[in-house]
Length: 353
Ligand SMILES: [Zn+2]
Ligand SMILES: [Zn+2]
Image (cartoon, rainbow, N blue to C red; front, side, top):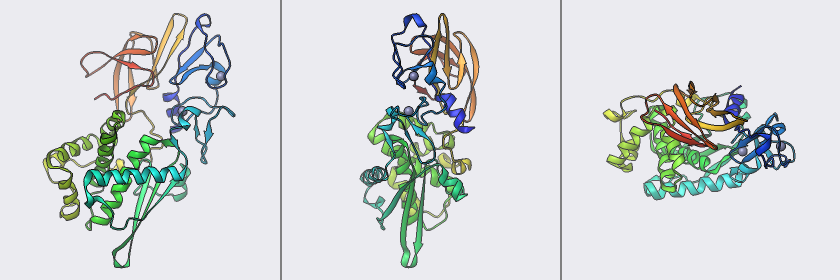
């Protein structure tokens, strides 16, 4: 059911009339297409392919056998377009982890290196957690653990979800590496929510150092932290990362006591498996539907005619959206609580308050 919701949300639609099409289907190659044509972020899709049962787990594009898509061990599909940027191979995942780790030590200083540097990195699929039957310590797309043995020796392990886009994997790798560092360096029991926020801060710093801005926005807009990450980012900006790390290592409290960090993070940040999220985090123009003079826009899974106002459910709230105008590959929207109108292109996301 969760998968279904995501597919509907991601499935892009755009119908051109028979008369105006000189499109070829990017899934099956058929064309020039007549009748209904669906426009995805990658290009036109014929009506037959639009009805296919299987979809790319990353972008929602329909997939069919022999079209260049791949299937993961747990049955997720990845389209031929996303395949190039998806990490499916453990060697590549290890490379991502090693690069991120080097970057973090560069950003945070030598004190952020591990005393026990060996880390076993593996990829897992969605079934992994149901087999394990546990949710404690589970993060969105990765898991880390440290075994402490005699003489204070630490053995580190990280597992990352396969088949995700490289940029997203980078953020997860930074998050998980930070868990390992905390495991090594913090003898006291920290508030679990504080730990998560610190790990998200690492992800944010790496993404900020690398670009791409979309990923930073994603971390800041992450509804699981209810804005707490923004507070920690501000705190770090004011006092420096050294201050945060020193508090982890040498502090006595289990959670931050400054006013900026007084509000506890919600517990569900830890518990949610979130693979994939049940509802979108941001407004997204999935696609447009053009059928003669009749136009509709699919915004975060809800279809709009021009001039219509409808509620759109996002992950942690519902927003009232008015679709002012539907253009060829974008819409003009107004959202309650936001001053002015803004445009949204196909595939683009907008975080709203
Ligand atoms: Zn087709
Ligand atoms: Zn895709």
